[in-house]
Image 1 (cartoon, rainbow, N blue to C red):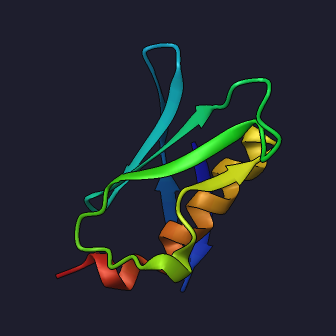
Image 2 (image 1 turned 45 degrees about the horizontal axis):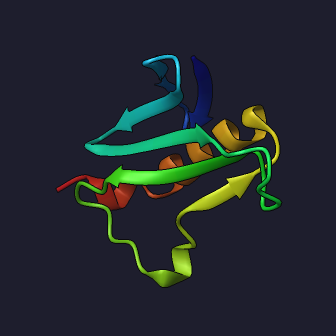
Length: 91
């Protein structure tokens, strides 16, 4: 679990390891997973995918899926993305 502070409010985000294969986070109805990539892939060791967009509006400029070489960095980037887009997720 990682803790971030935004506007004086502590926001806790929890990752779950699913089926011993991938990491998943759900935040305000938006689901994102981070999966390992095959060893021959040169775009990164991990790929982050939005599997449940909820109320979040995504277009081609958002750049999903996203590729990462480092799992910790991937999780931090996804968490920052979710925090920044929180206003779009609330009806």
